[in-house]
Amino acid sequence: MPLYEFRCRICGNTFEELVRNSADEAGAACPVCGDKDVQRLLSASALGFVSAAGAGGSAGGSSSGGCGGGHGGFT
Image 1 (cartoon, rainbow, N blue to C red):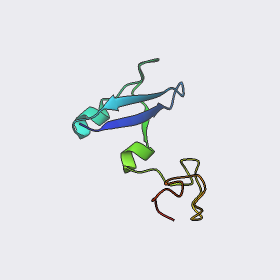
Image 2 (cartoon, rainbow, N blue to C red):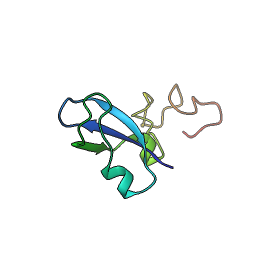
Image 3 (tube, one colour):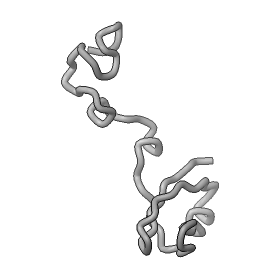
């Protein structure tokens, strides 16, 4: 079951919800205010990856720091 991130359009609360199907997604309600006016957010976990720049590393191919750090990683 995918775990999706939602934001309540009424109170602004961000929360996660297990979604089995589209009916579950339509029934998602904010745990703070109970409103169902929520928006599903696009998160890195939903995409299945995090870019090197988004993870605080360098996307420029530097071998110092970032993903790999010059120890047999990608350069």
